[in-house]
Length: 594
Image (cartoon, rainbow, N blue to C red; front, side, top):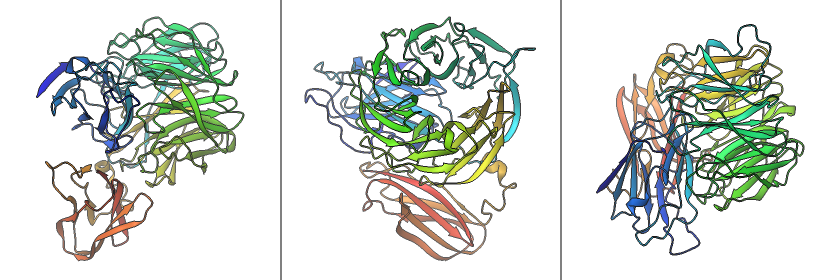
């Protein structure tokens, strides 16, 4: 076994659930499988990324640029490469612990070659999430952070990026302010608190808003990009790794820049930028030259009207990231597929049943396909459109929000293995937490109050205690509202009606389960405990809620128990196991790979 170690490396994880991926040229390296699988939630503490090739790769072509792992808030992830199975398998072991509940992007570039010098033709990329601790969803406001200077008038704070700018493991804030035409940086003191801030001015009348972070220049440090609505441009700040930004560079894009997302469009290992432009009704592509500067923008028609929002993910599961775009005037959402050669092509579009002011992507129903949620501002709802893994979206299902939702974010706030939704509601001045039942249905809405406007939110583990917290932004009072989550153990006494006291259902193991991994057990164990004798039913269900099998049905004594599930006859996919007793129910998830 060979080992290559790098001081800084993108933490990017790949797993494809056993599906085979074919590239157009037979002489190019072919990826057979990867893990973790796309869109699943995995623990960050024991995380390893494994990519299996059909033929041997050249280890000298694998480095932090050609094989990158990137956490949305953590940034570039350092670690070591191990080359196994006669160099047909690359295993990446992180030395940086990713944040809880974080969106992870793994990218392999076309700089990776086999031993004959044949390149990975178009690169390969996928996304997954890290897990978060079990929590209550009853978030409590802890602090309010002013963004204005003393005596300053309204600056219209809108949006925030929570990337770790100084590498201390804690989330900092990069906050655009539309009326002030600047970005203000708040550094986390290591306890989830923020005090003084630094101001980075932009050009006058920029109106900065939509934003995202990435390592644009490949130095292993977090950078920052913000779209400017009035000056029809994107400003890119390089980070110095010490919590400061250098002076920005500005790049023209379409008119009325409202949405911004990041992805590698050509497999060169460098992050490109895509914007949605409402006024010019189009999409702009900024291609990275490889040094963090960008070519003149490429205009793309998305087939809808008033392009306002966008997000990046792999919608047709070909290992090339795509872009989904929301329209203001046409009230549609379009899927634009990437071809790995700088281009985006319209594949499908669907009625959003409202103005798609902001959209987000993730697997909302546990079927391993990426879905889309949309904040439909003028209809006071959010929409869920299910993806089919082939680039198509379903008809929209809608759920009520507060009045005039401007933003939508997803994350596993209660730590139960599925993605919940937070909407930011401008007129009712609140944020609403919509609990996912695991199948893409939402219930038990909680409301968190803003001052004068619920403008947008950030879901992140701000204090690094393992559960997801929330930061809300109020653009009329120019305030950051910090809300703390409570882990499962902290809320047991507070929620006796919601958490069963007479039994506990634990996570199955091994999870995920691979049918082809002969080094691990051939069956799945499901442990649970009873504090008293009680009637028990333990069932396994598929993602549609259909019962697959009943493992236990009857009276069980007090104590520790373990049920056995043989997965060999079950198709690969996501399953749920449910323990019910004396009117109480607990559910957990199992992932089975081929």
